[in-house]
Each structure stands twice: as structure tokens, then as C-alpha cells.
Amino acid sequence: MTYDVARAEPTTAMRIGLNLLPAVPGIGGTWNYIAGLMSALAERDGENEYVAFVTKASAPLVPDRPNFRRVEVSLRASSRPLRVAFENTVFRFVIAAQHLDCMHHLFGTLPFAGRIPTVVSVQDLMVFTRPKDFEPIKRVYLRVMRRRAAFRASVLAPMSQSTADHLTRQFGVAGERMQVVPAAIGPEFTARRVDETAAFRARLALPDAFWLYVSGAYPHKNHGRLIAAIAERARREPGGWPLVIRGEPTEELRALIAKGGVTDRVTFLPRLPDGDMPLLYSAATALISPSLFEGGGLPVMEAMACGCPVVASDIPTTREFAATAALTFDPSSVGAIVDAMNECERSPALRARLRDAGLVGAAKLGSSVLAAACLEAYRRAVNGSRPPT
Image 1: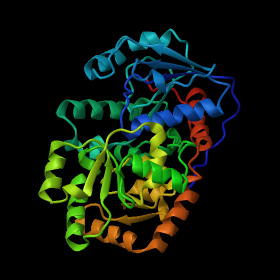
Image 2: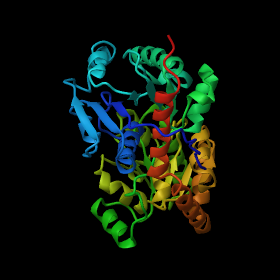
Image 3: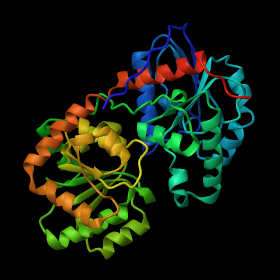
Image 4: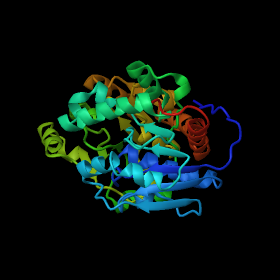
């Protein structure tokens, strides 16, 4: 899987704004995606100037490089109503004072921020495919603002071809108005030595062999069917690998685990330091990802880079980023999840093939691809279309 970036004619250096006001730390793809983007731009672009609009929470995302500058806004990032009100009123004047060539909004919405050329990152359109997963007010807001971005942004930057195709189906967005800007796997995500992973397992009291799932307990992450599969396997395969979930449990999830009688087979890990994540992937025997929907699926890519075999849902993003490097299954079927887990556990040869294919696939998802695609989106916004009247 490759992403070809058409080269625009050379331009003078650009002054680019980055809207990081909605960013808050935590597990989840958006924070990690943006962190990877910031790192890639800092590593690959010393020519253009970046002005990042941040809160105290999002300020750490901005690299300490001469061409990156922070403009801190006195907002609590956790207060969504205040942030949304600010973005759609006063923010336009804060932006105008910076005399930017282009403004990049990284959270899929396009605030009312004047006539400046805009790039809008779009992680997914899940609010249209799984609306019941969202609280009513948030659902209405996101639907309105996603639609506004689709029709009024100069360039849309979906994080996958799957999301680009969804933008075309949902809103009729033409391909020439989009530039896929895929996630980049950081250089720290590499397979670790056997002694390192053994020490890591000992430190966290992890089993010698285990399934890993990296995910918060959101409805589309499909924890319920995964727990049901673990319970079914416990009845059929008493010696099967246990499950380790890197994410915080909910009371509902704990109840499902207790009802399934697998409390001793499911372990939760709290948020780990970023430096521990490559060790976690390397220590796991395989990654299981039963998600029903993904805009990108960064944990699958990170696992591949760390040599962790991947068993994942047969959904568009898995096919796009993992291809033959994943053993896939129907995520709506508990039986299919059970069968895929059994197949992986019983076949060392399969795991070796998945590991090797994953390392090859992950090598194509580096920072150079991400930075080149993002810079192309900026050039197209500045040199090409302007927001419609």
C-alpha cells in the first residue's frame, strides 16, 4: 500500500496555522495521529513556519523547533461548549492577527474563521454511520460541522483512502479536493529484544503469552463480542492465551467479564508512558482488533512495526493498511472471532508469516510519507481553490 503525492510547483515558504485547541491527552487515535504529524513536519520541514494555537493541554504536541511557535489560548480544553463558542467567534480575530497563508483544522470541523485558505483533517465520518454512539448534542454539532467542512474547506485531508471514499459517498466530494494524509508510525515503534520484553512482562506481571487489545471502551470497539469470544474459548480451550486490554474498563465491561466467568483471563493496563508502548506490542504474542469501524486504526500499524502478529476485523482500514499482514474475521460474529484466535494460536508458521508481512507493510508508513502528503495539502490549499462564497 502506497500513497502517491503529486508534486505542485515550488512556492515560497508558507506561514501555516495549526488548530490544536480541541486536543487533550489520552488514549485514542486522534492525539497519537496529531503527535505523529507534528513530529513528521518538524523532522521533514525546516522551510515553512508553523503557528500552533494551543491550550495548556495541547501545548506539548508542538515541537521545540525554530519554525514552530505556540499561541496559547486561555481555555480549558475539557470544556467543549466554551471551546466551540471561542472557535466560532473570537478565534477568527486571533487567526487574522497572525497573517497566515493557510489554516489547518485537525479535528474534522471547520469553524467560522474568515476567508483564509483551509485544510481540514478528517479522521472519520462515524457520526453518520453510527449516530447512536454519540450524545444528541454532540451528534448534531458534528454532523453540521462535518458537512460544513466537506463543502467549504479548500482541501480535505482524510487520514485514509477509506475515509476519502466515505467523503465522496456521503457528500460527493471530488477527489481533486482531497489529499490523503495517512498516520505515520514513529521511529520508536520497532521490535524489541527478547530480554527487554521479558523484563517488561515481569515488571507488569504479564503472562508469557497473551492477546493484546489497545482501545478505549467505546461502542464501536466491540469489546462485548471480544469478551464473549474469550468466554467461549475458555470453555473450549482452557489453555488458550489470556487477554490484556490497554484501556480503562467501564462498569458495564467489568460486568460482562464477570458474567462470562473470565475475570482471571482478562487484564486491564492503565495508560502507559509512550516509551512503553513499543515494549507492550513486542511483548504481546498477537494483537486482536475486533473494531466495527475505524478511520485509520493506528494500533494495527504500530503492532505491525513492532513485529506483533495482527488478527483484526475485516473492515476497509484493515484492508488498506494491513492487507495480507493481518488475519481477518467478521467482527459481527463471535464465532468468527473465536475461529481466528484459534487459528493464530495453533499455527506458529502463520504467526511468523504475519510478523514478516507486518514489518514489510509498516516500513511504508513512515514520517516521510505523512509529511509529504500534508505539505502537498497545504500547497494545494494556498495555490489552488479558495473557500466558496
